[in-house]
Amino acid sequence: MHSLGNDFMIINNLNNRIILSLLDICSISDRNTGVGFDQLLLLERSNNYTDDFYYRIFNSNGTEAMQCGNGACCLSQFLYKNRFTTKRNIIITTKKSIVLANIIGINKVKLSIGKPDFYPRNILDKIKLNKSNLYSMKINQKNFLFSLVFIGNYHCIIKVNNINSIQVEKIGLLINKSKLFKKQINITFMQVISNNYIKLRIYEVGCGETLSCGSASCAAVAVGIQHNYLSKLVKVELPGGKLFVSWSDLYYPIIMYNETKYVYDGVLNC
Image (tube, rainbow, N blue to C red; front, side, top):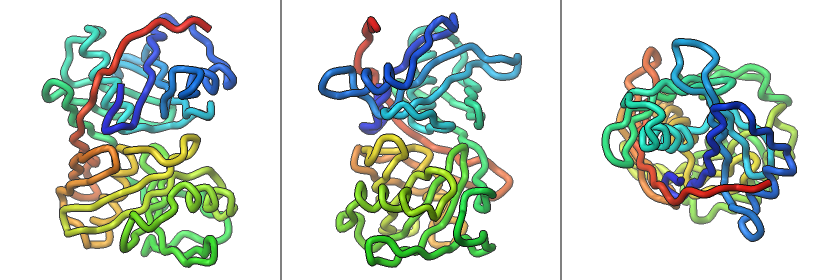
């Protein structure tokens, strides 16, 4: 499946019999010799009665991620289409996050992704957190201002004048190698067109630049609202397409409206 070009392989592991090694995942993710995907979603049974399903997220390099907005949208459609549930409101959890997916139409999902945390501890290494949520770093002889958001995973949001002039893959890799952060972090470059329209390009940890990223879209809009230059409903344009993000205020979760696409089913022998 994919959501705006951000593609996933979903494996039904509700019987908990499938165990994949890092080498297995890297082999399957290869777009020339394997299936090819940005992330692998491993569907498992929930460990409690309040949540409907549990899943694990693996990047194409085999590392495990804690949150994936587009992935949750695709997974919810997968569950509904294959009749694993008849519910249109599905509670899906990972190791670090809980999302509520609402099936609002064929291939259309409304996702409640949680509340943003602008002051995540244990992420910055060389500078301290501040109340303004605005920091500075020098990468490749250029100065960048950035903001931080944790929304199930870590995001660094950089506002730029023109996203087409940014070497996303190169700068994203250099930032993660800079040791400014204690953990690997997703890098999002944001160009503000108006108070309700932004363009993004995203470097995802373990994948490189992807065509879209739901959690990064939510994180970017949250930062824009926090800094008072975005409205409460924003159209987000990514290389793979457009989605909408809304956020009322600090006491409410961020909502994402997105589309998914079912590509094909298959059987994997490994």
